[in-house]
Amino acid sequence: MTQPPQGPQQPDPRDPYRQQANGPYPPGQHGPPPGGYPPPYQPGQPKKKAKKWPWIVLAVGVILGIIAIASGGGSDEKRADTTAPTASASAPIAVAPTSQDTAQPTTIPPLVAAPNNGPSKTIIYEVISDSDTLGNVTWFDENSAIKQDTSVSAPWSLTVTNNSTFVIAGLGAQTEGTSVTCRITVDGKVADEQTATGQYAVVNCTAPN
Image (tube, rainbow, N blue to C red; front, top):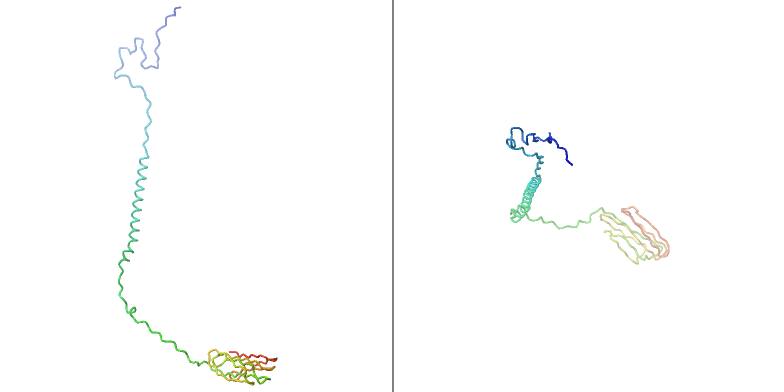
């Protein structure tokens, strides 16, 4: 079957270099236009971003260097401070002795006992009993020291003069009978008087200081 003849193909109006009816080139021109065809369109490529990490590494290195220098300077000062006392200690400074250092120590005089010249008190001790014999009698003497006699006769009495700073006056007695009485007189005044009864009774008198 025979196809009907087709007319000439219409050029694409979007083609800038569409073929004309007389050929692929415009009338009166044979070949490409002067200067050649323009290069095909290519989309622009994105610009490459500058790399920042080299600057960061450089900044960190500078900071670490400054810290190292500062630390080294401080340690040198500390070492200088610690070595200074050693140098001064190795070279002691001689100090000339003063007159106070060379003076002889003062001699302390020996202690001397003070005389027994306190306020004098005259003390009279007295003991009476229904028996002629006392088993024992105890009293304080002129130095406030305790004394004792045994198997003494009743009645019994003794006068002492006490010059002690602290005067102690006391009297005690035990009878061989059943009744015994004691009395202490200080500077003419009765300081104490006591009586005890019973077999081998014991009595005690005390004068206030």
